[in-house]
Length: 484
Image 1 (cartoon, rainbow, N blue to C red):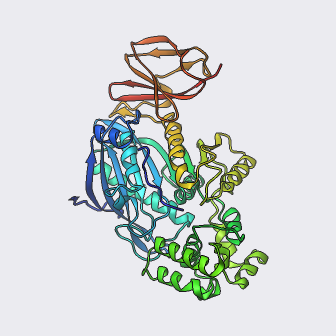
Image 2 (tube, rainbow, N blue to C red):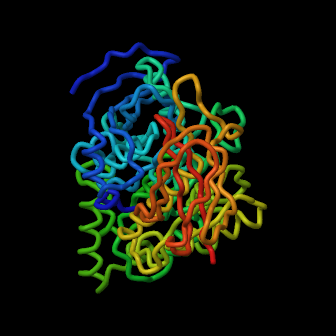
Image 3 (tube, rainbow, N blue to C red):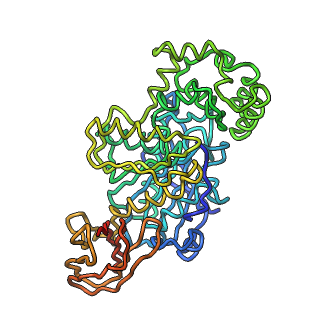
């Protein structure tokens, strides 16, 4: 789904030794100070560190099971004395093979969110995916759940080698998120880690955003409905992807698409034009031939009938194999953020995922329409803001050798929900306390000494807030509900 610019929240090469046959190279791309990040991301009060960021290349496997090389962006906080959690961000649909985090981070693209995550105290991993980026080979397996997951897993492993070699310290926490296609990829990665006990990772919290989780249901229905839709290139991109992976969807593009539309699709498949170019050409052609951009009109009537009447048709089987919400009961805290007016990824993806997960017995889960009137592009900012606040409630950062665990957290709030006063209990030392709302606005700040305190919050409006306590280089966070 469409790549979103980060308006809001907002080369030195290290020669590395192969370790476990994963890490190939790490190239220093740049760094930002805390002051620069604050200016870049509208003085977001959560930012506490500067960021250093690298392009890493690493070995993984292709969809044919052969050894392949992939790339991604690795962004780390600039304070080397602390231990940080890891965070995986799965990016949105790429308009071209170079429109990926490890490349567009230096041109103001989606990769800059990696700088933000580092400024917030995460070691951020942003995979470019297979078939895209610095080492791209072959066709990108678009919305292919398995490869979205293993590209991220292998980057976590390879990136871990780089962190060890360069004495960047991490704890055991792992957060997962992503937007649009990346929402699909985030859900796929979370499910893969939780379903396969052989993986060495454990999810701390996951927040997929505005993703096409229901490929075989909601997205299939969108394809087969004769509606105006201005992102027709997603359909051939998905068809070509699954043909690359499974090899049995069609023998010739004209079996699926009418010849007038198959011609530019073939150019895209051959790498002669980008996905953005293809989308523009298809819109122009649809309007010229059909009167409006109705992607349904690109399809051969025979393939439509086959998809509608034969559940075992290879296309239906491929679509079903890439749903990411079913056959799974999440264990880690999971939040889905979406917007009801999304013009690219129907919000019904999130509602269907909600219904399925609740029926399966998920416990720590919620779903939020973060801005009902926002389209896909406008939804990014409120979805990301909610994700950041959600994660900060679990995030742990400690000094090297003294990492805090859940059993030794220093921040205890009571009552919670609170009215006009909240008790801050048993602080072992002094520090700074902040109350911040979901938009990142600083509501109240206090300097507190060791011990317990009763904090007057009578001027804080009803709502949900994040309370953070800073002591030295360590940070504790807890959610606070104000309800009267």
